[in-house]
Amino acid sequence: MQRLLTYVLAMGCVGTSAMLVQRDVTVRQKQTADVRLTNDAAYRDGLYLGKLAHEAKRQAHPPIGRWSTEKDRASFTAGYREGFGEEPSRQ
Image (cartoon, rainbow, N blue to C red; front, side, top):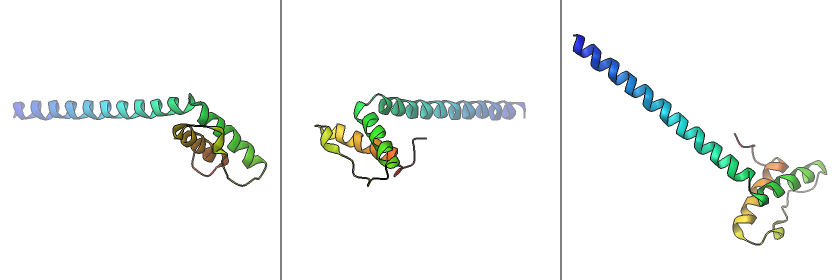
């Protein structure tokens, strides 16, 4: 009986530890994505211009010609849409 109790307690500790480690990894990945977007100049530019366009009540048409690469254009568009209010903000 005591051996069974020991196994149950050990499995409970292992399971709890695994859940805590997984939660920590998920939080770190989310923070890494947020930092990457925050450090992306095209994203920040789009966020700023999207807010300005929203305040001026203009149409949501991002001027992607400001950026030459597809990656930068995608980042700019994502920032513009978030700033304009088309997408929910990052969580």
